[in-house]
Length: 116
Image (tube, rainbow, N blue to C red; front, side):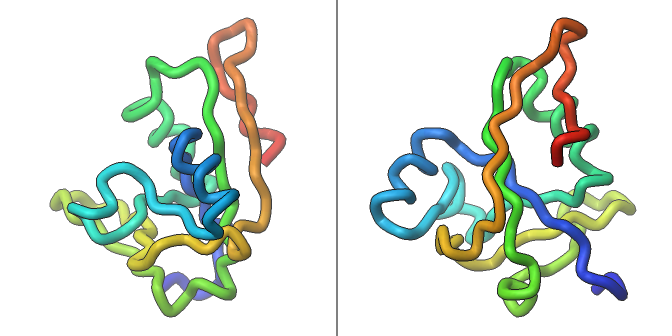
């Protein structure tokens, strides 16, 4: 585990997040198979957006309450790479979401991550 608590984010599925707002808990597509929620740090966000969200014009980013979730977070690489990504091994109670960011691509077709 890294020495300090980094800011942890999850790029959420809008429909599932809307449902979570009424049920109180969020699980993304694939959670039933993976058994964890894919997350990233702020430093990893650009790469994640480029690799997995390059065809989307808008995204919903959840900042997690890291201090409440540390027991369920693991930093690991499951694809034989060197970079460690945070994985949340539980569903996400909406009460453990610190902030919600709605990002849209700017005129240069980039997401402005400076608001995070």
